[in-house]
Length: 481
View 1 (spheres, rainbow, N blue to C red):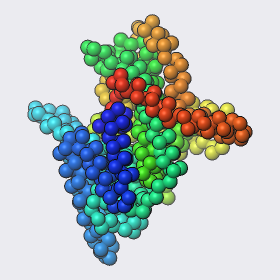
View 2: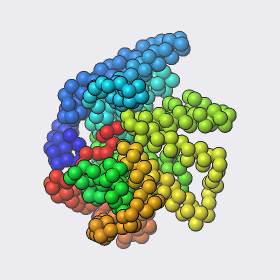
View 3: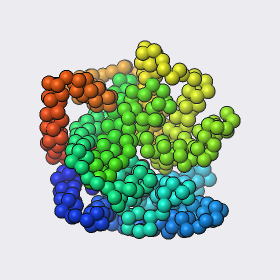
View 4: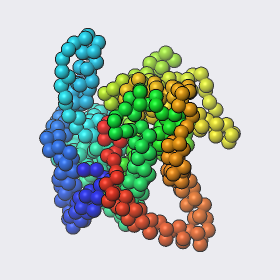
């Protein structure tokens, strides 16, 4: 079950929240949310719920033992063991096939690689549970004595599948003592509707263009030979649309999760802050997938010493963080290369380029453009799992392959979607919030904007429903991580 489905929006969510609001006591409401979350997660495979429950139980016991121990070494040992068990489970399910395939290739072993189903969202809820255990060890939160409430935290259907990575400390109070206001409900509905439209209309529209360019019925287009048959403009257009799709798709999921949380009193932190207007790679990673960036910062980078060390050690710390970030995204070499790609540019920016913090406007525009180019090629690392296809795609952009710069099909695809792409690009920028701020300065335009804001969720829901009724949506891209 995905958020961008008619069944979820108009059946599951409606019934879940209707029953939720009929209940009066907070305990009853939490039970309703827990049962709903387990049903939601079991939709992708009932057996997978057992794994989620098991990992939550391990962290529940581990955190209680940590909380009860005074001796620091014992607390540290319990924290390491509990976290290691969770990581071991993640590695078994996510990386066994890749590790064995790599080993068989290196040592020329002729054997069948076992196929292990990847539980949806395991990377996200594993990191959430590990952050909870570490925070208990650090004394930042107390251990949750009730297993079912910790399971509620880990399994909340708002965010357990594809984030954001919500820390227990951020929602600890909301779990048992949250309050609900009409303002939160209104903001939640608007945020959910905007996220649904961003996914169903914009992200899926970009995805359709990507598929039109890179996919074909004979399956050749995503291979090196298939890419070689495309002109440069086709590779550029397809990769640009994938870059837009990746942001719109993932940020839409976060918007919907944050919106659904607000509807019932949970306050999740923002996960995106218009990353495509970043003026440096450092700024980009302060804006993109913020919950993952802060996780690695607080639980890996800072414990290693952060930047308060020698230059070689600082570079090593950055290497570890970005290698792990790449590995976290998937069991494939292209994700590791993606992590090292960002490591190289961050080191160059930190120690070679050393950009000024407040450049003049034209320098900032140039820096934004350069950052977008860097991001553009990083998303190509995401798109092409086959390294030979990736190399061919990059080569097509820079070197003529005999196909010319463009062809009739690419030109038609671009012209037919030019206005749609303009809207998608605007949706990646803070232009609309800026217009709201501008209009709010005058009473008349403020009233018009207020009326528009009241009507917009209904309009967006209707438009999204019509789009989804054609069965034209794709699963969220980040489900695979």
